[in-house]
Length: 330
Image (cartoon, rainbow, N blue to C red; front, top):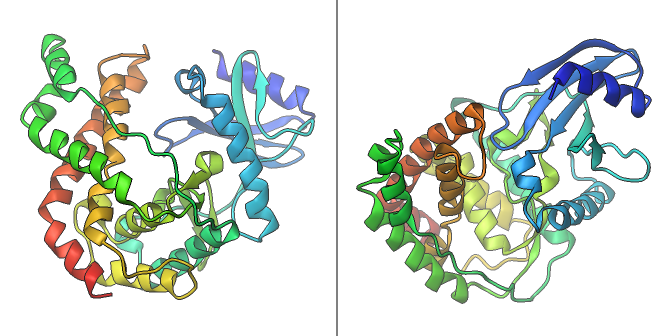
């Protein structure tokens, strides 16, 4: 696809004026491609949705659900960058390419060393607000993970892929995490809430002490305990395999100050159930091995994400006792 021609046609079809700057690719997107484009009518960010994602049978349903929930967040005053509507719909399509358009915001995501107790407190508060919008005492239909990591290891060896050295000796820890998680998800508290489902630090833009949440296309109803736990870890240093437990506790205390959740639960079960990164790992193993994709850029992203995700899985097991200690002493 010729990017320049695509954007020229896009601004014309949607009456966005004439391009004055761009399109320029914006770094940071791990699944979809982001571009900034300025016109004589406004400044925009355009998210081009991954064609391989859109081929999934559940993709359109999931995006439509997220678009509906996004309107609820806006109604309740959650600070976020909301997708623009054209022709009464948020998701747009042009020449087979699906995309979203957002107004440009001059903020930037925080790097790990920039995150302070203030940021964790703010994120704990807003996460509680999101969960409280439509909190339900209801069990969620759970789906156990059934990932054949042994198959991928053999395939990586056959293809002489660099990910083989990353995963060949990790089969036991991956299967243990998957099996324990499959048991734990059936023991989760019976609660559902609106969840962002990807609220780590890269998806919050800051301008001084103000922020806006981005990447709302993953919105859905999930177990809030899992999201709270995972996001508290991410904001306190888990992404760098260096959890700062003062930040971890600040996030959790800010959340529980205005939450309907009970903090007195079986946190070890939450620990075991939090193995969603295994699905992210499988997604990127497939990218690295050119399964369901055929682009070199996608492959390189996959290889890098496999490396980082494996590091996270190993570190997560290593710090289990420390995590549970701080959870039980909130």
